[in-house]
Image 1 (cartoon, one colour):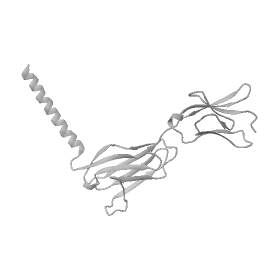
Image 2 (cartoon, rainbow, N blue to C red):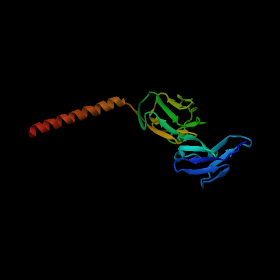
Image 3 (cartoon, rainbow, N blue to C red):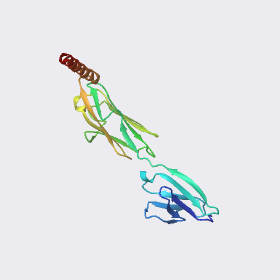
Image 4 (cartoon, helix red, strand yellow):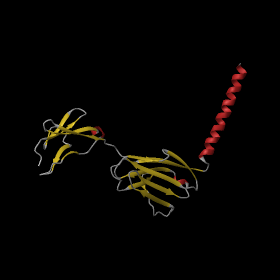
Length: 203
């Protein structure tokens, strides 16, 4: 059984949060927890926010006082879709979208993909749609759509159960994006060539 008072202090503003089982802050998210006949005291923070990150100290009222520092980092889960926000896919090729959920205390229980705000039906007559999900410190969900057609264009959204969603817009094209970019580059070179001739004429 603990013979001394145990306090929790937040170093950011030197704020006394708890003494024993009493709370000394108006923020009711903070609570000291103690099991009877135990020497373990736990500071509980409900609905942790990023602003709660920082150093906390557990102090014991011995003579001299004993303290133990704890560094807390609160992270917010992030949802990313590789290659977004716009992807150009050749017609009849495979759409390959990978959604990553990072900085999550635990993997999401579910990840839902939607197309133009409608959940994707993996059993639709269209066929050729599959999903591979791997859970871990970084959870990945890979959506594959074979033989892309025009109506596959649109907004694809990845929605994990434990954080915000993210979206990417797919454009189905008949020309390879690299070729399109190359053509633009040729026009730019021609424009520069004309400008150089123009300057030489003036001189």
